[in-house]
Image (spheres, rainbow, N blue to C red):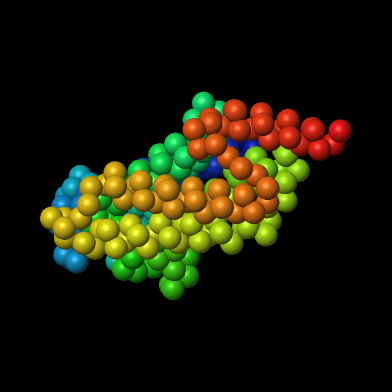
Amino acid sequence: MKPPAHMRNHRRRSGGQRWDQHNSTRQAQILAAAVALIEENGPNVEVSIQQIAERAGLARSVVYRQFDNREDLDARVREYILDHYVAEVEALLVLDPAKTAEQMFHEVMRRVVSWAADHPHLYHFGQNGPVHGHSAGETSLTISRHRVAETLWQQFSSWTSMLAIDVEPYRPLVYGVTGLVEGIVTQYIGTPVAERPDQETIAHLLTTSAWHLFAGHAADRGYHFDRSANIAETMAKLFADAAAQQD
């Protein structure tokens, strides 16, 4: 005796969901294994499917079934690297009232520099081919620059909107800052380790560059910020000034 139709459909859907989850788990295993091998061997050393399968603890045939071809696998590896990198950076783009704006800048710059310095092989691998879900001309650097810039802009514009400050004309500068960071970090990673300054020096350079750009444009609009004031103090002053202007 067959179960009712609605129960049969539910079983098929449940089975399909379990299979999708199973495939998703295997893909994550494979991508993590590929990333580990790239870290160990470098971006210019061909890592075989067999090596990836062994590292993931799977049969080679399973790897082939999960991806269209080798190009698809590599593109998804770049996507995997990109997502993890951007997630680390975006986690720091959160307004903390107890910190100064410069401290927030510095935390982000320090994370960007340290990630690239700790994972130079992944950083270079991301530049050498397409990323899954994006056009062939885009690299992980250009995509991450866009995503981080958009997140930074959303945060910044939400803060200024509370004060009724129109910052839309300055939107291109957000992309300029992320492009500046990308260029300096790429040059830093490309410099032999023995000739590089320490990471903190580069992070400080990026921080002060971003601060001066921000403070300079703010001063042109009549806003003068104390670098030692935390976000709460700065926002309180801005709200007080806005209220005084309305009076």
